[in-house]
Length: 223
Image 1: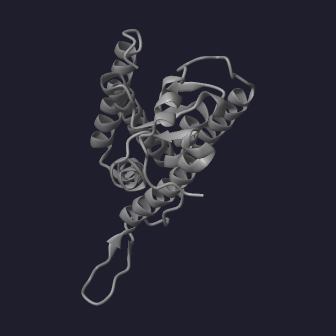
Image 2: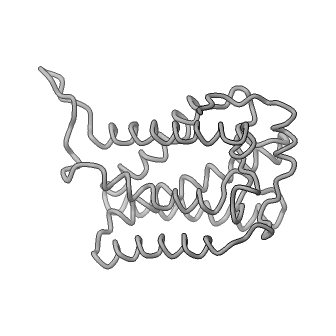
């Protein structure tokens, strides 16, 4: 039911070689429905002037894109990515490691994470005695990271590891939890409460970098 590490098998490597990035062969209309849901969520938050939610969503989604670009570059340099998605599981593959459905889920994940925090985001949990507790934003980020790592572990076990693919034997649920999902949810939980100028610099820099990398690397055939 769960898979905790990649296996580096020949079957996995062959599955990766068969992935066609940005092919429309499996395109279907769920693409449009999912996009409509994401638009509805964001415009609902904008209409209510819940800017913190919008900032949380964009902060995590930008980090997500930087990781996916990095994973695609690793695939180009080494021959194989850290993770990959198979064509038969999605309507459209954006980059070798992310399908349209997964990417849109990550566009909502930051909003979900921030909504799960207490109204007072300065609250600290697990305080006792002289210990002042742990910031709820940090606890929330770690908790969400653990949940997402376990879900990814489940996905990596589907189809004998040939649907959502972990390629390398040293890549698995623990590095995914620590190096990937914790940064994702730290972004969503902390960026909204940054000082306005700091937050603006962070988001503009993050998304400018994403845009530059996409504009440069896709035409070059690197990703």
